Length: 454
Ligand code: UDP
Image: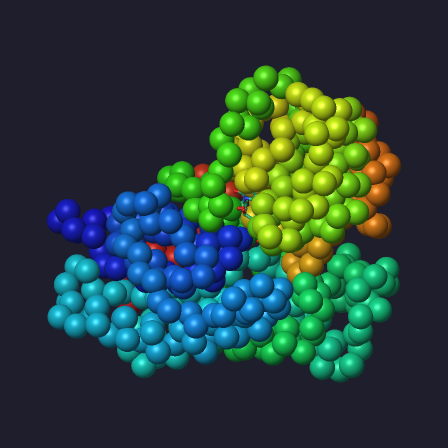
């Protein structure tokens, strides 16, 4: 779509600085670059992506004003609120500078695409008279669950007891109260404010991009489209649409595990990862370690190194443990997850059910054991186990015998086989959506049309 060998303008992309948000935004950048646009990624100092993996993009860092306490607090909602205050003037200054002298050129900024959580962008774009598009990196069902949770909080109809309640949420089947996207620190006040702030922006932007697909979430997407006037464009799973995106991992990937996977038999390995934020206390870590060991199945386990984990990690994953599991276990700090899930040796994924991990697993036809921790992971886990029926959920406290039982069920029982079959069917349906004429592809064409109309 280049005109006379020149790109069709520059898109400024603003990711929210967490791994699960950076990945889809950079994937979107790769897709839109392949459609002829130049890409600039504007990012915070905190969790900044590695530019050398993306030589086709320009990168610009803006100061975020976050303190070490903000970063280590675990209060993600208030960290995001701070970013929305601290980054505004820096973004405005940067964009004003680069716009000077470019009007009408092929490198003119056509539009800003921002993560829904970086909503300060809307005011900056208004000031500079630039159009905006929002990227939502969660499932559509999560948006409906978040707005319901915020509403229940305002009406005083939800409390911390609901964190474990099995009661069904009215009008949100099959979600129970315990599946609602409670935040990590359970501070519902900050959370409600953040939901309201992001929700308001939908009317000012020109479109909303979703990293989801019709064939997984038709009814949730239809329900949202009924309430919103802007076009909703489900172009997910973005990592499968367009050219393969280079890694945007913030931690170094340990690629040795691929050689280990190469030695395992087809569908034999259970892959275990809780994503980039969720973590386990020492007891949970020990239960997981011995659940995996006792399952007698080969396992590839990501245990992230961080200041709170290192001590307990050394204690639990002792020499004795390593000798007990021997070659059957491979433990890494961070894995090339998409390649791992695409490897024929992997037969199951024990996951926290972050939305990216969920999509990546479904796209490879891998059934899941869900161990959600907070936020949208709870909603996704319920959909995996009760809507798409491609996995089972570990509902209670993590204990080794339950983990062992779940692994045996998924990897060796009839029930697990049926889940694998359904996961394969879903994978095939998604492949059709991505092809020319499929719903994801049509939404992508619509997105390009909208951008070209600015
Ligand atoms: N990921 C990875 N290596 C790992 C663990 C995770 O590359 O060892 C990637 C994974 O492929 C996914 C992202 O990190 O794209 C995590 O996003 P997700 O939404 O699943 O969870 P979050 O980290 O946001 O909780």
